[in-house]
Image 1 (cartoon, one colour):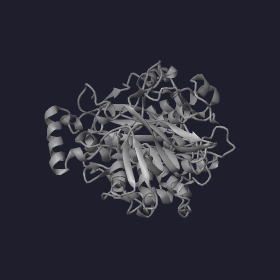
Image 2 (spheres, helix red, strand yellow):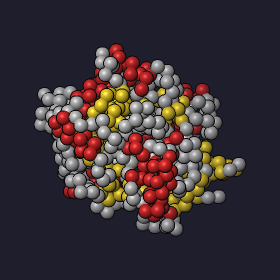
Image 3 (cartoon, one colour):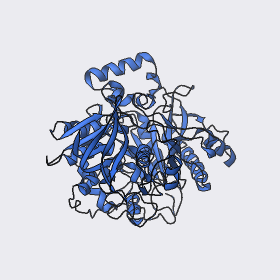
Image 4 (cartoon, one colour):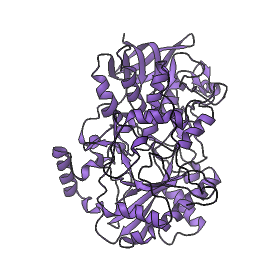
Length: 554
């Protein structure tokens, strides 16, 4: 029988970080359970190949939403990493901490000790930051953590045009949205190092596995074994055999915002009535398990380019082969970047204290599934609201651990979401109309200039809004007396001893931007709670907030 002091379910962003930190001093043994296989191979490790792994069943759980009632009944893809490194091995490698106020909101809503002053030291501990000659706030950044954070070369003139256009439109410019000042236009950051995807597996798990006290096994977690109100291990399927992995100290679930609530419910932790419907005996009646599901939706605003300077010229088999070969042999060239090299965070209207709209800029008109616009050369801004009030749920479709859960985000269920999205489209058009883009801007590919009225834009949103693949919130962290909280501020599952959850599922509310950074931070901070250590000393750094936020949009 296999056993360890700590058994972690999921070798994703948070799980890898915890395997590294919990084993660091050699006192405790750590065993990590991962259902997916190896992350070796160029399709994962080459940054520019990012559209491939998230569309491959080898690396992705292949989940889909239920028909989304407010998006015309469309079923949206919900990729989650089924591979070493989890979603950090199939994501777009964009690195965003989130805004300071996001974490202050967590603290205010019952996740005591998770304010920005508490989490900033963990962001600094995990980072090894490189400015790449594009400015930044060195005092706010980490210098020797496992996670290398870099910037792309930004040689394509369109990257600078995007920043200059934002400035011309009256917005702030920032040299480091992960530093003091998130608000504004500036360089985007990526988890890429020496030309390779710097996933949580490369940053944390591989170094950890060199230690004698860390084991990785490939298996499917079926349920947490709970005896007398305490988690004692995890029942797993390995090939055709089932066995129990014993945890002498704790079981830690880090299986994603989709699979963590699923595993809790299969283990008898969740809404009692829902468990009864599936014939599962209730051990802890926690109404919040699977609820509070959140995500970012986004649109691609695509513009035809007047000049042939976009990545479209490389969108053919010959060019792709050349780029791939150059990357394979030298780790240089276009293959070394995710091509998201400029970004922006802005506020949608006066009275909004901090940014609620994000931009990724990309010098090609292309979808996440790798399909380009038929028009040829073009560029696009991915944009969407950061703090939608819509909430969905992950529920069981069956008590079979091999069955996919039901996922319903309930996107666009709040009237304010429609207003926010229309605003995103109109503000983006204004940015592309600035002088900085004059040499490049051709016709608007989508939505298209004929789409102007609220009703027309709503039709476009309904048909074209896509997930940014940032699910979170389904095992909410909060005060012990909060009936919808699943874990307490030390990530302990309320009502069950020896069991924690630490991944993006515990976010009380979604953070600004991409979620890989905050998910790793959760793994870092949870590790100190698990080991009973004093949290890192609080930071006194104060983030920049626009002095005119109450009465000006920019």
